[in-house]
Length: 206
Image (tube, rainbow, N blue to C red):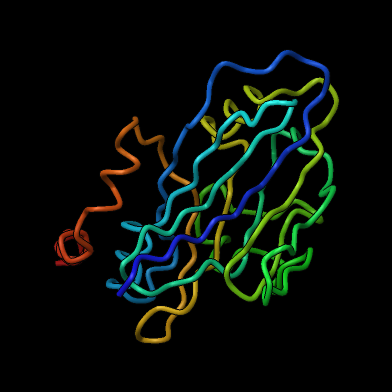
């Protein structure tokens, strides 16, 4: 099956500060629901979020599904304890056939209350779509920069949650962004076998 690439471009309009020199920072995802070990392993092996300085005081988040296993990001949530984000400025529905709207349903990341600290979606900071998700533009709170966003993600004061459906067996799982993947580790991660990750997860349950 041909690899699918699902991009969610989350563009954050920044203030008047100079553009950061940091770019192409890629995060993996960790499953928090574990409804089915194979689905959790698929998501952890295939799903990434890459943050980059897009220039023009913009920040771009690309949500990437490296394949080859079937799954789709259908809901995106932001837990912004750092208060670096201000409001969703625009939603890009430019991809034909994609229905994409602000405010996901359900309103909070499924399973978000099972992690410590609990994942609580910031009011208005979620999106729901028929896959694939396309783009969201956020305004930043005054005085914040690209580095503010990345620093807040590094300390987990800003977290991104995704609800993923369309797995082969019809299940769904929730994930939260995890640690930074050093370049070119983001590319390497896409080639890791899902079976190996599933085997490691099953060992933990023994």
